[in-house]
Every structure is written in C-alpha cells, then in structure tokens.
Length: 146
Ligand SMILES: C[S@@+](CC[C@H](N)C(=O)[O-])C[C@H]1O[C@@H](n2cnc3c(N)ncnc32)[C@H](O)[C@@H]1O
Image 1 (tube, rainbow, N blue to C red):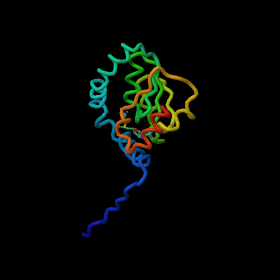
Image 2: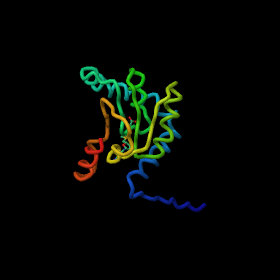
Image 3: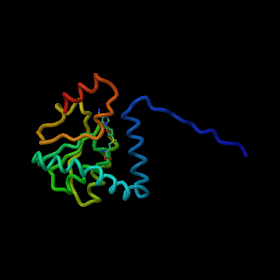
Image 4: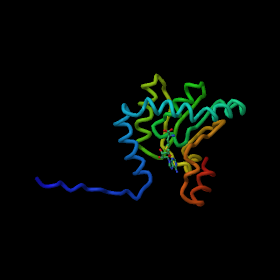
C-alpha cells in the first residue's frame, strides 16, 4: 500500500491564516469551547475591575475572533460590538452569540480602518492582540485607527 503525499500550503497573509484557524476552531468547538469559556472568564476578571473603575458602558472588542470575550462583555451588561480583520471570524461570531441567546453586532475591520468603518464612538476599544502587532509602522497606523 503506497503512502499518499500530504500537500501543505503556508499562507503568506495573516488574515488568511486567521480565517483558517477560525474555520477549524468553529468546526471543532464542541471539543474545546466549554474550557475556553472558563479561561475567557478568568482572563477578563482584571479587565472588568478596570472597566468598572473607569465607568465604561460601551465597548468595541476590536480583535473579537469568534467573539468569546464579546459575549462575555455583553453578559456582564456592557453595550458591546465586535470587529475583526478575519471574514470567517465575523461570519461565525454572530452564531456563537446567538447560541448564547444574544444579538451582537459584528463587523469586519482591520484596526487601521476602524475610523472609516465605524460610525460611532465607544467608551472603550478593547483588544487582546494589539501587543502582537508585527511592526512599528502597523502599530502606529493601528493606534491611529483605534
Ligand atoms: C488571539 S485572536 C483573538 C481571540 C479572541 N479575542 C478570543 O477571545 O477568542 C487575534 C485576532 O486578532 C485579529 N487581528 C489581527 N490583526 C488584526 C488587525 N490589524 N485588525 C483587526 N484584527 C486583527 C485576528 O484576525 C484574530 O482574530
């Protein structure tokens, strides 16, 4: 019996890579989601205490992925929307919110384009990925967009 070759392709685009990650994450979520909800809740505890001190009411979760943190913000009573550069994340995030009994607005935007894609203001723009921006030029443009 011959061994079938496996074809591996590496994407050069970060957005395409995230699309792939979110596609498979959505597909396999029954395996990992319940643990992820717990991790997300723990990770947000320090954020919740800052938000309440700052009297924040509205939040844009601008690297929302599938929207786990966005949903958690909504459950804590914040008026929240989610955005992300990944089209696949934005396709599935409303479905995750719906499964949790919530209707949340999600839209596609890179940080750099938020000024153009957003027609409102928020008390807080939250990102759990801003520290991972790959270079100084993108960091400056992202900060400006946010
Ligand atoms: C670590 S994941 C987010 C996980 C998600 N917040 C959660 O709690 O499950 C980082 C996200 O940042 C997004 N992202 C990366 N660079 C971005 C950019 N320049 N603008 C907008 N989103 C970006 C990616 O598409 C990815 O969905």
